[in-house]
Image (cartoon, rainbow, N blue to C red; front, side, top):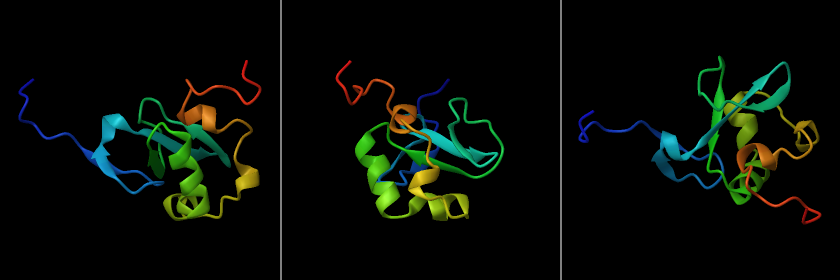
Length: 96
């Protein structure tokens, strides 16, 4: 594949940095639950985030998920451990 083909760009919902789509993770809401779209193929609106917990926290504070998904998504609706969806290598809270 030629190297001069531009990569698709997306904006991180947290820090608002525009970067290559391959550097971000995509989250979608299906059946009212936030899930990771690792193949970037699930239907519906998605939100892109850097795989860092800071970007996820900023997105919540800015209510970026509400805009991205065009619905009110309260922090209480986020699944327990949702940060591990975007950053699976992050340590668990108890250090295990």
